[in-house]
Image (cartoon, rainbow, N blue to C red; front, side, top):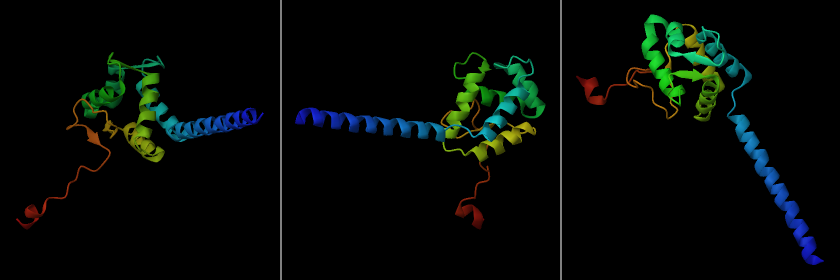
Length: 158
């Protein structure tokens, strides 16, 4: 009888612990999802690049047309090297959405994502997101952080 009561007690505690694990996993997962405003902004960028109207695929040609002559080739190379994980030369919508969740997991805020994507929508270049994925030409890719570096002390005295 006592063993049955203890077994029941441990079962309840185990269920509560599993419930807590589930709750915290869901909370962590929600933390890494984009806010509605950020999701709308990255979807706007996707839709602007999707000139062919496929809705599920953006080709290099679509992206080059969007970025134009100013940053076109460099931005397309950098973007595809970070987003096109299966390296088939085109981005699928699930790759695109997963990329932005990955960026968010790498400590970018929704506000920073919205700001950078807004800049791209206004004609700016694709940036080198500091997410562990490296763009095709990392030294040439634009960065979301200032490229200005303070000269070392000996240079100041000269």
